[in-house]
Amino acid sequence: MKKIIAVFGSARIHPNDAVYQQSYDIGRALALAGYITMTGGYAGVMEAASKGAQEAGGDVQGITVASLEYIGESRTNQWVTEEIRYETLPERVKHLVDTADAYITMPGGIGTAQEIIEVWQQMRLGDLPEKPLYIYGDFWQPMIQNMLKDKYVNELDMHLLTQVNTPQEIIEALAIAFDEEQA
Image (spheres, rainbow, N blue to C red):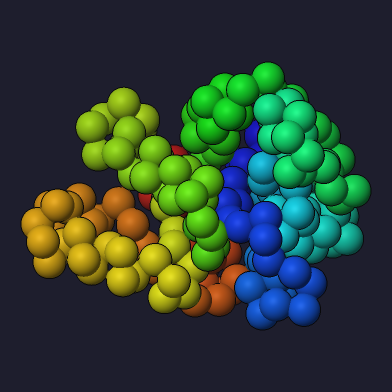
């Protein structure tokens, strides 16, 4: 059975932004490695990862939510091959967190922060089995370092996060993580 990799990130990134291209490359790499790409299904990082995966022949799940569409903030991107729709944001986040086999966190705002924190906290407490949780690049480092410095995060909990800087690093890390999981 194919592994599902969730890609979290901002809906506000545009196609001319470097993060958009990085997200596209990640989606493409995931598809070429045989993974299902799962995103929130909308614009920005979600669109870029979906487009990269779909153009590489991969499956793309878009987990959408009616409440964002009601306020006119979002519309499902054309690269989603399977849409799974929820009425509320908590239902959507629960699906993203519970269903993924691994997570990649790109730069983003409040929604992305909610997703990474939700995964991290649930794994920390044992409510979710430990799964690969990657932060891409340096974007999240200031927040994490401030939490560590001020002792709001325990150093022991840092093993749950892995920083990656290229799509190839992600694919290599996933291969190692899933091989260890099966051993």
